[in-house]
Length: 394
Image (cartoon, rainbow, N blue to C red; front, side, top):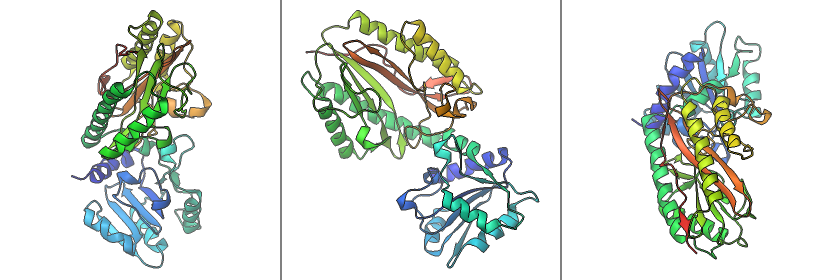
């Protein structure tokens, strides 16, 4: 079964749980930027106004321009493909009439909190409003953000296998980074060689390639979403840190690893490593279905502070899927910038990062990032945890 068919079948349950008549993904000219959910629904793109729908009863219906119809028919994923030539308004309203209850509930892809559930453009929303004006469907549009959170987040077996493949591809690159990274090598040189390896292997980047991987060496490096420098080189006493995201067969990894540059691990570095791992363990222990993301974050945040380090200034974890930051629930504090996402209950089958770090004076940033899948009883690590500090010897 194709991955798109798996996700369309999965969507039926979520449409029913959301009490929708129809879930509608409404797009056009997708080559120039599109709804983030589209890769889960079709392979390729669409040109004219296109309506991809899953109904409460499980029917998958596409209303698309006549030249866009054949690939959807050939996929076998859609129960009904309705092509149009001059315009689609009447075709779409006929579908609404057939499948909507007396008080319609039509789910659209918009959200104030979740970027991956906010794919409907304002212009397309105005078009829909104009088409249903003075009809019984006026006022029937609601947000499908909850459905999208589950559809992106709860992974099928095929999706999990692809993410595991991305992790393995990233592990190989980390191994090669450890061999390449020597005293005197610049951050930029590491970044450049990783890009070469990824191009040669046909791998994609889990976020903007300009910042993937993040490479840090020592106390003067940019922390966070910085740019690797050709002026900063690996030196004795530095912590060397890499944050790498790899896409393999359309799915992502997001992992951080670090090394100490020297002949042995100093006490302050070991203490920092132990504190970071203790916080990751504390969060992992709490992570299970039904728990809220801010509760998991609070456990990790309290642990790192109890070890004598400042709290980290970001969320403890995010979902990973088609890209590194894949929307839905996050394991984060109840800060305004995260909206309602830290209060969404965790679901079995979701994949999260567990990530944080500490900055050590004169040494740099010591950060780790692991990946886990939520199970019925808790979570399982998909990555092999970094519990020790490897050395880059001078």
